[in-house]
Image (cartoon, rainbow, N blue to C red; front, top):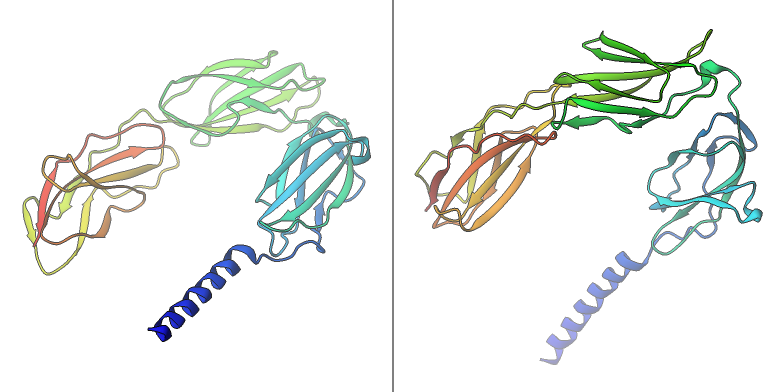
Length: 316
């Protein structure tokens, strides 16, 4: 009995030791620093957008980025964020800045690596950029065919040109002196492009992709298991349905949800799973049990098909 207690104690101690190693033993970063890649120290950058890049630091799980107006000694911090990526793009007013990056993990933080840069006014009009505020990212929607475009003004611009491109063809073109404009979009993929112009020059186009999809996906058709089928000698059941997924860059991406219940009444949900790019899946289920199931297809625009038929099967 004493020997058994001793062995159990050793096992528990070793288990605790391994767990402690997994939780507490992180790479010591305190004497390391992150190498800054871009911009170079004291770089002069045209415009109000700056992209900061740094090398990944082994053992770091995140990075602490700080930016100060002038220098850190001024105490005028304008940005501070922890992130997992090794780059960031940020918009700042024109002026002088100092920035730093540190690597972090759950226990340690590295030494700070700092650099300075200056944002200056763009001298060439053609190098300026229209910054689209709305939509601020690419859009997949089923809500409306009319959207209100909004963008920042560009200094020395007296005109803005808007192009709507579909299938590599300019479908519509508009001009305005304002920085807001309402347009109607047809269903499918539209490329919205905006540029600034003056008497002699123009900027490059800034673009957004807008997918308007107001069509419900096709209703799934179940193939296997068959309705009222008895399955024997296995706990693994393969579920198969149609249709297959079709790749398209002009419609919202689709996915299926499979619903599996313990009984015919659909009162006891066994599982619900979202499945993309596949119309089959295998589950290990309990024997001597009856199940019901159906599938429904959705898309990222918010459309949904009708539910498939409901089938029942039993595992003996």
